[in-house]
Image (tube, rainbow, N blue to C red; front, side, top):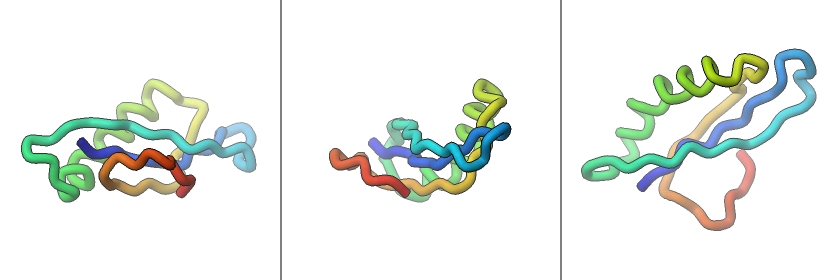
Length: 69
């Protein structure tokens, strides 16, 4: 499993930002899959959360410490 970690900020208050994670499985789970399929997943997330704007994202294996990006 891999996760897509991204920083999104409110469009009405760009100084208010928050980290989010989307976790998904690949077969086999490769980092390149996260980069290939990550952008469409971010687009879907943005459609469901129109008040947020994504500033940056990264892919990687699931981490338990969940450090901010």
